[in-house]
Amino acid sequence: MRRVHISMVAIGAAVALALAGCGGDDDDDAADTDTTEATNAPDETEAPDTSAPPESLPTEEGGPVDVSTTAFPETSVTAPLESGYISEGEFDPAGFGVPPGAVTIKWYLVDGFWAAHYDGLTPAVASDKCPGTSIETSGGFEFVTNSPYGALACEGFTSEVLPPGSLFNCNDEIVYVTEIPADTEGTLYASLEKMVDDAVIAGVTSEVEADASAAADIEINVSNCQVIS
Image (cartoon, rainbow, N blue to C red; front, top):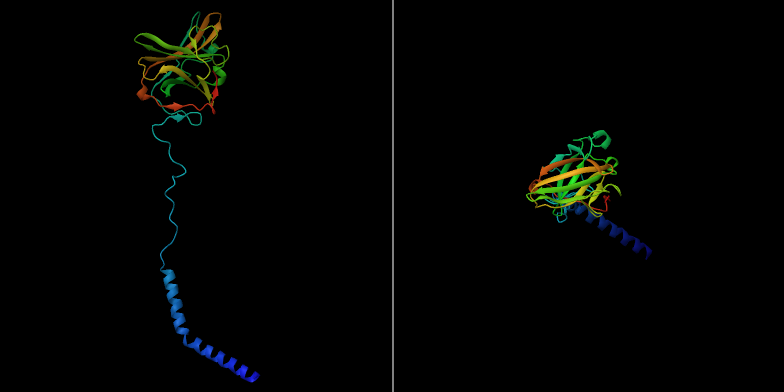
């Protein structure tokens, strides 16, 4: 019985070898076909997802610029603080600390009101001085206000002193949000003054025609800007 078992195994092996030899060409052809099909298969590279916006979308044109995180934009409504004055005696630019022309007022719009950027004025120089703004209309001066850079900086001034939330320091750039509505027609005035003696006020001022269509819109994020007054 054992010899029969061995012979059957041998026969089976011989048959298997014969079948393998006969099918060799077919298998090679099949392999070649598979290789060709794989080579000619279409590129299945995953297409990019266009449903999501790109990571760096440009800021929407026409929207206000957040000057608490971005540089002030260009504006066409500007005028230097070039007229020095003092209520008594002779104006001393060096003693005042701001020579005429050293600071430029750049006007912007904030929520429908005019705002004055004191470009070139540092916090150190502004300290203990009193910024002020107004507009001269056909009926005279209107919206005359001040906002102190320091607790007592506007002490003794007769114009209205605005409550906190008008004067800001945004990355060492000083901006004053006025009470002048953007649609008011007239001449914008901005000043920087200081009480140098009892009832003696020294300062520098600027003036420019109000043109809201030529001014850029900005916004002030109070979480990133220091409220001076």
